[in-house]
Image (cartoon, rainbow, N blue to C red; front, top):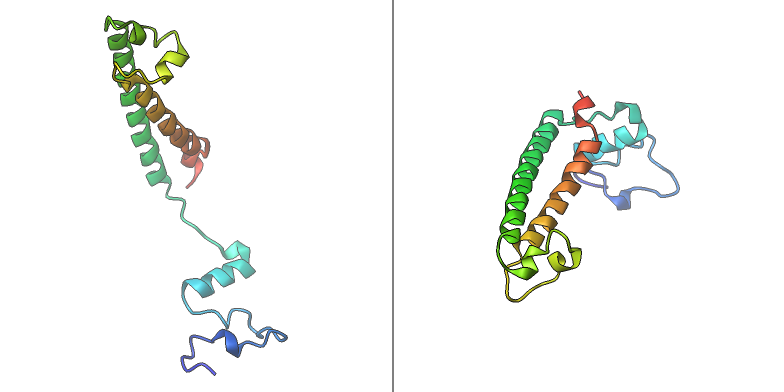
Length: 133
């Protein structure tokens, strides 16, 4: 038998005979609380962190707005650069995504960064965290 009354080892359990109280074999604390919530799902209560989720959305929104302004600025700079390859970025997907050893490729890295931020933003925005109380 286990020496600590709050903990029963797996060896102490008879697989043919489940414990009379199904939670008795679980360590007190989170394991037993999770066991209880599993047995009686209506007792499961979780905080939604609505304000933190909304704050996160606001930060993502601000980041996206900044990235959008950077991209617009870079598009203008590339168009006015006098570099034929860069001047076509706004019209030629292949050129904007293809590396050109003679030029920096900042516009494409911005686009990729925006894409990742939009994934995060869209995921959180679609959960409608502001409906949670």
